[in-house]
Image (cartoon, rainbow, N blue to C red):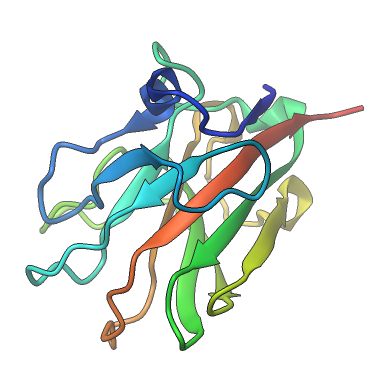
Length: 168
């Protein structure tokens, strides 16, 4: 599906479910940090009590879900703007748009990864790693989010070079 390096405001069209509620992190294009190019996606971490917010990466401006049956991996780079590593950062693949209270996500694959403090870290999820029964990979939401209940370091972070790579 190509690489999104978050160079222009048009690139925000693939970020979904970002209405500013407690379940989402606000995002913007920022020139503060960049892995490649001149900018990246700045994720402004909520300070108002949200514990498990998400950023949803849509397949396109017009399509929320990805067809991961035709993909080999998902990859992106994260810069955590802190002096402490973020151990509960997670990549999620699921079949539900929202994780609002009372509607826990069904059929979710979650991979926790550590975002290193003050440096770019590549996160990569092979589609072969996804082993959740009944997860419909042809209609999958791809998200990043907090996966731990001890969410104390609310530093901002940056995402660059998001890609869902097609099978060869």
